[in-house]
Length: 405
Image 1 (tube, rainbow, N blue to C red):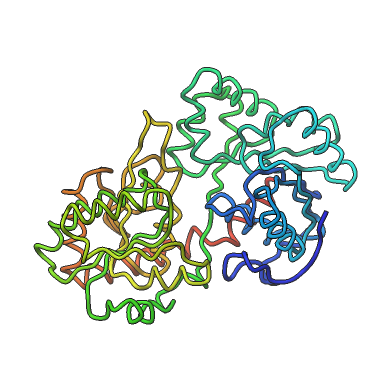
Image 2: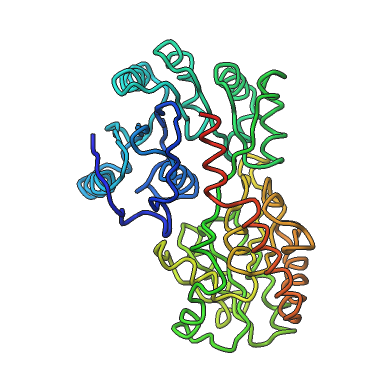
């Protein structure tokens, strides 16, 4: 067990200031999750940002270890020691609802006096809900992400999701797409209890003056039209579609550059595709970028584009697409794919456009329109910033979570 206070090195920028902590009375909460930093990823950032905005004296996190080996164990221990709340790590790198893990979770619940439980991802850890209820939990909340929508399509996992819905008080969902898919696997009563709880955006960190000019200058992109995509490099995200769209973009905007921010297993294939397509000189790869530099990399773009697509018969799908909202907060118009819940993160025609995922033609058409119209970019960017401030701020969403707990 580790406990500490301070600014963790892996913490997303701007998170967890003292003024953001919700300290009104609530149950003491046990978070049970596989998705917690320093393990990287969107779900991990979601849970950490929420945890930082709850009362640290009334919070305990039970999580798996990031990865085996000395380096992984040391990184995990250093991160945990800097958190303002208690973190308990299981030795395994993947928590499963086994009898041993369930007994330990129940012991932590009783030992720390917790009366509410938040499963950071409903499937499969929500299967522990009946045992934790017997151990004294009065409120059980399970949050769903994109993968539970896939679970809802397969008979065996569909039955498990139904059990989770029956044994928890609330299942949360990211947006209308995930709600509609997951609800079909639940009983009518459990579906009725679903509540929206999406990730948020730190509007104080992601904003139009985030340092984009400095990134442009460093990369030699000053005075060039820049289409930026910030995401892990995997096939679903659609960076290949952007590369295939570039010949059409360059025909209208010869100086345009595609800036791909992030690392991932698809990078080698993407570099080869850029070369084979003849646009290698107009595509820049940054590799993985630290959290602290992400806002400036968004700001380096004129247009944000990620034409994500659904793969594997609906099993590989976008849950929401927080990157579109971070881009909107930065003041950029967005071009989004139509995979899963991605359209929930765009006001189509107001903050940007939704295109058919995997279509270079549709993507190029929207990108060219935006690059050629500064007034349209300004109008869509300003509307996106307003929308984030109205609906997607972390403090508003943390208040909703506290009410559920």
